[in-house]
Amino acid sequence: MMDEHIALSLIALLIIAGIASEWDSSCISDTSFNNAPLNSTAGCLALEEKICIPSNIIPEAVSSDNLSLYAKSDSTLFLDKGGFCDAQGRRVYFRGINVGSNAKMPPFIPFEDPKWWDLIASWGYNMVRLTIFWEAIEPDPGVYDQRYLDKVEKMVDEASKRDIYVLLDMHQDQYSRCLKGDGAPYWALPRNVDPQHNNGIVGRFWFAAYFISSDVRTSFSNFFKSDDLKGHYYDAWREVAKRVNQSPYVLGYDIMNEPFGGEIPNDKGQFENGFLKPFFCEAISAIREADPDAVGFVEPSIIDLYKSKLSDFESDRLVYAPHIYRSFAWRAFLSPNNKGMSFDSLVSLQKQKADDLKMPLFIGEFGIPWDTNPIWGRDGQVNEAMAAFEGQFISNAYWDFSAENGSSWNKEDYSLIDDNGRPRGLDVNVRPYVRFLAGVPIYQYFNPESKNYSLIFNGYRSNAPTIVYIPENLHYPKGFKACISDGSVKYNRSNGELWYKPSRKGKHFVNLTTLCSGTVCR
Image (cartoon, rainbow, N blue to C red; front, side, top):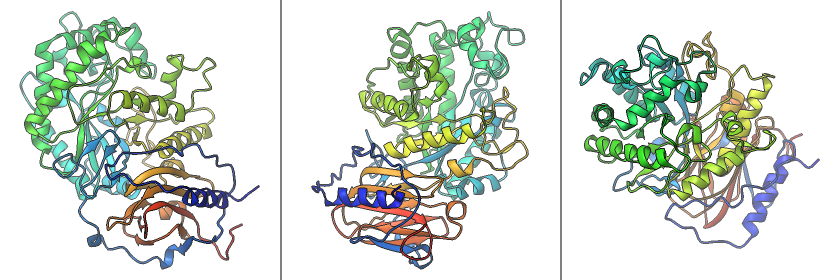
């Protein structure tokens, strides 16, 4: 069988030898080369017109060489339908993680020890989706818990110190903790729903409440029909924005996690366009009173995740941020045999919806539980999802990182930290990826078995480098070999960033393999 790295290099050289196209500095992505087959094994081969350098002799990159990086949309940094770009015109890609499930219960903060931020940063995550809760912000009508807001602000500050961007997520499941879920305070339940005695569902099949719990369905319907409750919700968001609006590391505001219309029908988009869309627009307007540059992240109705009826928004600076859980796709009967709906096809489905809405796509949650049977099926499915996101250059956030008691909420167990505080799943979750791309993306692939990584893009000669994150200690403990089509590389060893600068305009590649002796790795 042909060596995998030979195949990757030949693909790259064939592309480079093709007809060169002009690079469009408007920062619009082009993923026309996603489907190149990769079916070979590990290795490396020196070819003509390729520069290969072992990691131990790559020159050190100095942070001061690189201009400051920001993630907010303002006069110098912008959001287009392809996603975020930085002040230097590079596309910014986010490899994120949700923090976290254990915050669904008091004191509603995932952790306070800074060591967990250090761990997240050491795994190469450059953003987190931080769960916050209406109940914690406004425990009583018009009363805001300043100590809780202090802690949220502290979380953003600690993330910022490590160059980790924060997407604030107003989280809810089953509407409220009073209904065996999380989110809304007790006083936001309708009068005919008893906070103590109701038919909310506890346990790992809690999601069934959206279909069979009359109290959960009534509570959602009541909320979206109540101007008073929605006004409180907007005010709670405004209080959060007041606390974090000075941080350049606030990526945006995820207005409501997995919204649901209750008894409001959505077969013709009645809920999503008649209630949910105006709710999103009013919420982001309230947030922008405190943070004028705020980017809003919007989600479809959770039970119409793959069949959303949302139509165009009048508000700008919005990101479409659905979730992808394969079990939801099965419920939606998108695949007749429940086996043919791959993660790649699910990502493509959501990408098409984002394009229809003229918004960039961000996958706010995806994950596989640890009790998947067989257990190795968990890693295989996560790898399939990661490969789909990498191949289509889609920013995303894995669910979940809980520093402790990750399986305590309704017996769900997704966390990269087990209940004994030990990391797990890193071989597939933590991997090389492009963080900053000075050009148009074409192709990206990582094989967690062979450790081979390849990036191909159409770019130009620039002072701003394309930056690839490399988890050297995890995947390349004996070092790696970087092979580039042209130009030069530097390596910031302190944070695992490979900086690549092309020497010409056109198509370029960066390939990584494990370090080995001789010309050919076997």
